[in-house]
Image (cartoon, rainbow, N blue to C red; front, side, top):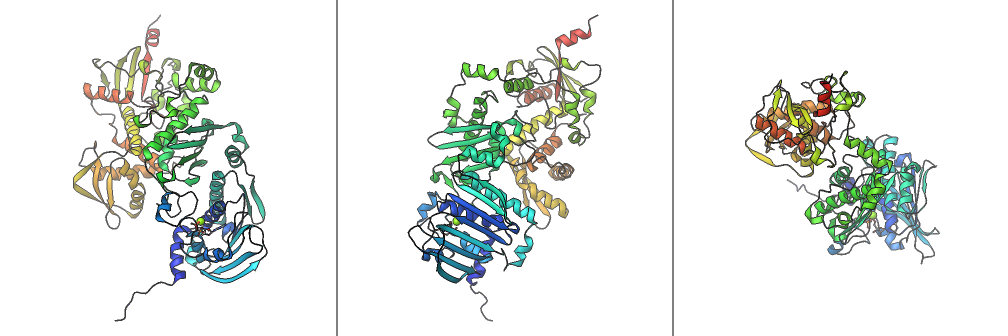
Length: 620
Ligand code: ADP
Ligand code: MG
């Protein structure tokens, strides 16, 4: 038998490696723009034809390359940016892996023209299938022009995977925008099929933000700026009214590198808690600068994910900075910073919210609107009407129209909501004396005396709110799992298996430890610590079923859907008898919620009847 192992020729090895870095035209755009930025360009032009499938050209006025560098640049691991392994932890440039040009040269026809200031003539290099096919000296402008034609011409399978022109162009704009936002001092332009698309002159961060987001944002951005020895955060958040149902206009940059981070997104969303509807996303552009030794950017081939030395601090800091900004700009009162002790001493938290500040704040209409909304929240029919979709999903819940906003009851008399921001903690109708004797009605409602009347709690909806918040918090700080003594095997249909795959990580965050186990089978290794073992199989199947029903609701993130399903599924149901103790525990749990008065979908969890109102009922 002959030996069968052989070394792959370079151009094939490069093509394989290129798969990691260059997935689509937009990935090449990102790499080329970053190279131009690294070269110190002050003007960068991007030209694409056919959404980059036919041509991607980047023209910069940066420092250029020597004739020899121009040829070497395309070799794998050819970089001028690091030389020792220590450098890897001190990175101040966008690139450092020396892979981009090699990858591009493996999957497209590339030509390069470049000239340094000290050279009279520039260099021109042509490359195909990773091989330099031609070099010559040419007269050319200062800087570098790289053109790549016919992306994936030699990898038809990949070419076939490309999406429509409009979809690919969207990706290009995304990458272009991210780099442009990170480097506002650079003049960027984008031309597509000969048409000017963007022309962004260099300027301040704010100017660039407006160029990207549009003029209407001129008055809608709140400046964020906090500085400590450890890190700096600057940038902008959109005022609450700019929140959208879609996830766009959300940018994090760490040391000017755009990154994706669900974790930090959560921190911002948390800071907006109570200011925007749960299903909306705040817009933000936040720039975090830390010592490069505090982050590892080498954890992902396209460098869009990074690892922080201590991400809890970053989380708390981002949240505090955004809260503080919103407070300073009178959008939210600066109360209730619940933060790690480790960052309590940060400037952002220490800065007093002075009486003077508070006065000017209180006189502004935004503030009024905000507090009013949170003080006395009167339920109106219309507000509930829009929430019907989600409610129809609950089978055992009475039609809310029968419980609230009923004709004949003066709506102004039942105040439902204690403040979600902790203003009226003392006055919360949910503060029930532990001695009070409670009444369960129709195994659905709990009647309890409050200090100024009485409240009626819907046991299922209340429990749902409690669980919802618990799961939500759990998804930021993973939940305790109990290992199953006898792991259960779950066999699913193909489509259910795909669905489960999709949510498996999210399930892990709330305590379900599930592993793939051969084709369409899974093994349940652990369940949330507070769920009774025994019917986990059933629970997961039910969850998948609910999840499917709910998955038409595009406005909710996967995790949000999952959390809602879980809360709904695990809540005690109507029809279940509760002991005095259980009822007290339930009410106490509800009172500890951030937003105790409604479920995630907007149904009231309890109503209060004030003493005046009760008296009024009996007056002549
Ligand atoms: P990396 O950016 O990780 O170093 P690349 O493959 O992207 O690797 O680029 C290789 C090298 O080519 C860079 O380190 C740089 O020296 C040089 N180079 C690439 N693009 C440019 C450019 N636009 N201007 C000047 N030099 C460049
Ligand atoms: Mg690079």
